[in-house]
Length: 219
Figure 1 (cartoon, rainbow, N blue to C red):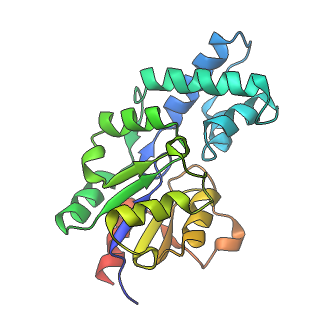
Figure 2: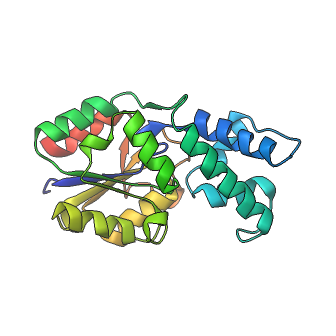
């Protein structure tokens, strides 16, 4: 089997353990808007992966386009820009892996459902920006995952075909986006926030630890 020549990463739950900040910023937004409840980490986790607007919709139990959903989404996004990485940290093995890929001259990109301004602040705060050829969010004018649009744009930026690129994520949205883009390999991070859907067992490379990704290059 040929080796991948480029990598595309999801952000939250893949590169970065952002759950504590997502929870804190969602609770700040709820309080700001006058809601009388706050969420625990366990209550927040199932809502991570589909984007901030979907999170707001799920938390309130209202449609995506409901005015209350949109108000919570915008409040959350604004607060996140001010508190991008109070608690977030790269998962174990991430920096080691990125250093190894960079040393081999392998291009990397990031595609995330996180609001664009928050994405920029998080990547900068955690020292990840310099590793990436490109990072994209839906606010940059692309359809959300599982649509392949952001992945295809990243491949264009890296000058590598999807069939020579690996997609690495932790949710159904990431996995389906990788398959929809025609990626060489789709990888699932076991340290992430969502369980692997049963229908993808045997079709993805499971990463028990993030550094397992380097085995793809040595196979």
